[in-house]
Amino acid sequence: AQTVTQSQPEMSVQEAETVTLSCTYDTSESDYYLFWYKQPPSRQMILVIRQEAYKQQNATENRFSVNFQKAAKSFSLKISDSQLGDAAMYFCALIPYNNNDMRFGAGTRLTVKP
Amino acid sequence: DVKVTQSSRYLVKRTGEKVFLECVQDMDHENMFWYRQDPGLGLRLIYFSYDVKMKEKGDIPEGYSVSREKKERFSLILESASTNQTSMYLCASATSGSMYNEQFFGPGTRLTVL
Image (cartoon, rainbow over the protein chains, first blue to last red):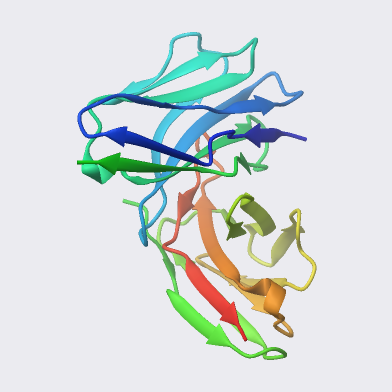
């Protein structure tokens, strides 16, 4: 079984600044995928970024990047140049390569201050 | 774009009522999921289905049942609603052919049981 831990229930960042959201996980699988999902207030959950565990290179999507440390089982999300629209609940998730058992962390609520 | 829709955004029911939550996806995905989202607990899997008429229990199936008569539609049923089933319910879908097993989410149904 997999577990995902987000130790920061809430975070805040000043507009235009950088913030890092933490995520650690535990799994016995060797092949898996990691995701960060964003859930804006009263809106649909959408995928922000994903990482294949077999890739050493950290994924990047515009202002969003990850720091993937496989040995430490850590998968943090960095948001650069934060914008008001980044305010949302962020969920870290893990899914093994060969099944549909996706596990989510408890979420981190990000506030962006103007 | 993948579209996952849920029949209601907000629902208020009384204890003991039978409740149906409907989910429809338009991308011919084989896999569909029902999650429950509670503060501090993240998303927990109730049931999932990998084909028409097929279903598997998730982590918290007690008090729920599901139905999948057509590939695009996955229903969650609360046979006799109780107050502890007050929650946000999220439906998701995924294709078996996806490299990343990425799940696409509906907007959610916030259910209140009085």
